[in-house]
Amino acid sequence: MTDRPSATPPSTRRKPRRGGRRVLRIVLLVAAVLILAAGGAGWWAYSHLNGNIDSVDLDQAIGDNRPKKVVPGAQNILVLGSDSRDGANGDLDHGNVSGARSDTAMLVHLPEGRSRATAVSIPRDTLISRPECKSGDGKTVPAADRVMFNSVYTLAGPACVVKTVEQLSGIRVDHFVEVDFAGFKGLVDALGGVTVTLDKPMTGAKGGLKLDAGTHRLNGADSLKFVRTRYGYGDGSDLGRIGLQQQFMMAMLSEIKKQDALGNPARLYKLADAGTKSLTTDSELASLTALADFAQSMKGVDPDTMETIMLPVAYDKTDPNRVVVAQPQAGRLWEALRTDQKIPADAKKSPATSKG
Image 1 (tube, helix red, strand yellow):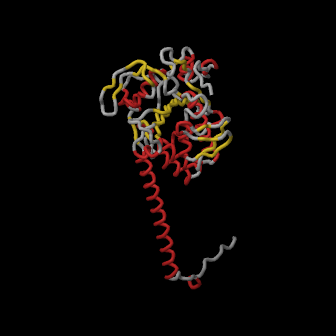
Image 2: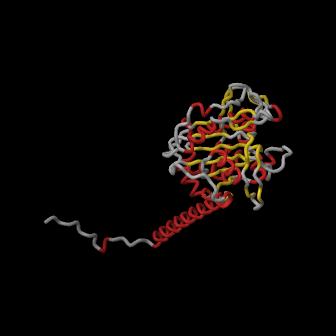
Image 3: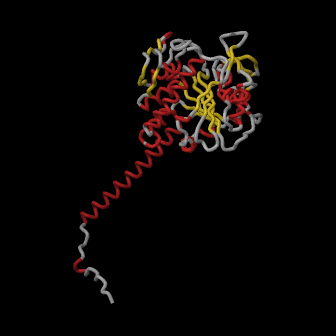
């Protein structure tokens, strides 16, 4: 039989010193305080960021008359950039303009599997038919024909923009996200800037940004000027501005990926704090948990595989300063997205194009 190691005789065991027990208690107490503090900070941070987000209940605002969802696994998100001058936004743009418009509008389609994405920009000067809507204060805004797309937000708010896009495309919009001037600037600054490359100089016309051709690192304020530049680059049209907005969006997504911003808790908090300060979403996305889950589901989307398209439009025959939806190109584009199919090449071509 193998001898077992004998237990230490009681006489040879050292009794713990009272001072040692006191140190142990202090260490445990400090650890407990740190854990509670961390938990409290985490809860404060969660509550703080959650409280930043405004929301709109789309189903309640729009009603039941909405397109049916065709492919359950696909998602369509309407991204709006508001040009409101309220609050901190007024310091970023001193134009004498009341109210707000959807300065930027993109319908982002994520196919089933979410390995890629397509962003369709809708020109703000497009003449469309606006459906009857309820404004934020409950008043009825009547339907109207040949109104500018970006005026819909001014008259009836984001839910009416969603309803208008659904009527225009026949596509069910699953979510919408709206960011204003201050939120956009804060997000870029939280990243430490975004790098863009120009193949021709930006002249700075009408108070815009002035840049030489080449590569530039832009801070938040200059980035805002960049995406809003119209007269100082190319042909000065809204269609040309869409090209700059799409270029910047891809550059920003690449910057987020390069910094591994979603994998760095400190940087992620900084981005989330900046991004949610001026964020409005549909009610289903209006929490950090929902936004985090949605972001996690998009991890497979690579900026290099993301396709940017402008809604095919043609110059209006009555007013050449406005455009109208071009058919049959637009119809083919919307149908491909609605059914989660490959977009035909001819559905990406717009009769009206930027000449710059």
